[in-house]
Length: 185
Image (cartoon, one colour):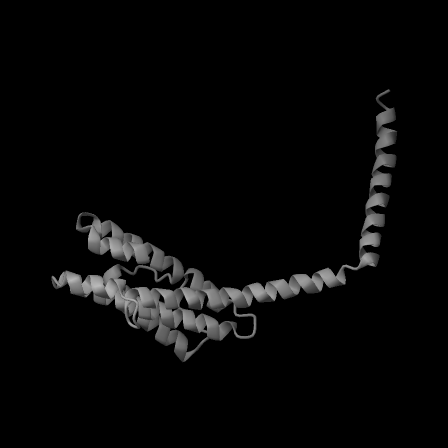
């Protein structure tokens, strides 16, 4: 998204393609069916407000919609909410960039696009990346703990029992096949 945003400013001959690329990538994160880039921000704000009024309501799809439909671990809800907040901020800043460009204020649009201060695009994109990373870390940590617990459950007795069952199954298979193979002698 961030690259499409920058290319939109620097390659006016392909601006429409970069706008579509930006929207396509935004829709992967938060899918709002039927949204176009000019109304995406307003529709996102409406959907986010409905979700915040009742966290069980997730009126959008995409990766973030899937995440918010599957809150499982401690801290995951708050982390996912931070992703939504950061995504909204990034979208608002993007809208500002496009409005500046449309008003013929390209230098200001580029400054807003490349700025690293709070409220500027690169800063906002970094915040979004951090929020997504925090959410992934919660899920990855839970997965690591689940795998470790499973590994602990699989002690020597379990492995020996599984091995014994495998040997018995192979033996019975060989015994059953042997009788059938004798028919072909």
